[in-house]
Image (cartoon, rainbow, N blue to C red; front, top):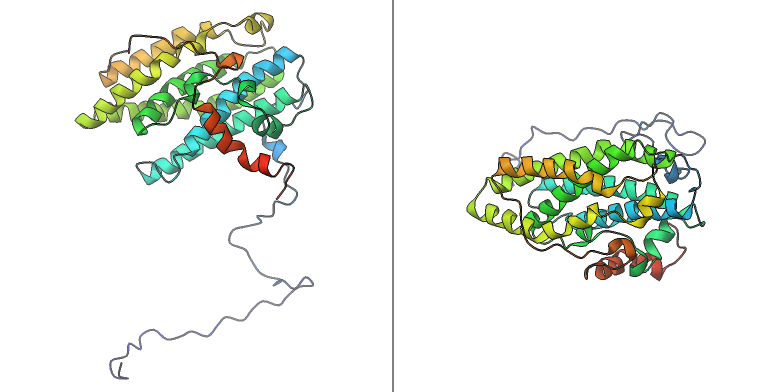
Length: 301
């Protein structure tokens, strides 16, 4: 390039003088635009909802496992969508929902473990499949995006009904966790509703997929509302599942009416997650989730 054609409109500016260093060797007047991000003394347990009290009984701990495992497995499922969602915004949305659910799981699992001295990590990473208490709905595979949205609509509608009722629990820890969680699952349900309407009212292909997805996941909803003997022993502390069905059905009916969808009919899943009998995909999910902790037990970083 000749000197005549060289663009001389941009000149190299001299560097600004560096601020004087303090006793540590760092510039004394340096202002980090990201703020103080030191996490060396961060107590992760401080961010969890609940009173920090020990579970009052083995039954209380078992119920906490039910709720914690549902949230943990659904969180793990949604996290698999990161970088695979159909829109960049959905990467963020599904990731945030997964993190909310992980927070709920941590709170419930910490409370469950307080009964026998296990940590939330012990319960998440070092139990085998039969020891989990998650329902079959959250164990269903992600499938395509419509399948995930259908599962998410049923799960978030159920969880909003559950946490709304659990705020009145006689157990203060359950009530505190529910008070925080209900605000978050309200958004989760709205997100699923909007996508259900969008897919049902979109192209012929998107409608075909959401119809098929609801037909696939609907049989697993029934397990959510079965009254187990544990609930009878926790009167006042736990929420009776069957009491949540009318509110759940009303919301789903309203969404389906707006989307011009029909409530699926047909078989009902046997379920069994509350007793340690699980859908076929849970084992693979757990092996992926637990491999690092089991390969390097006790590791910290």
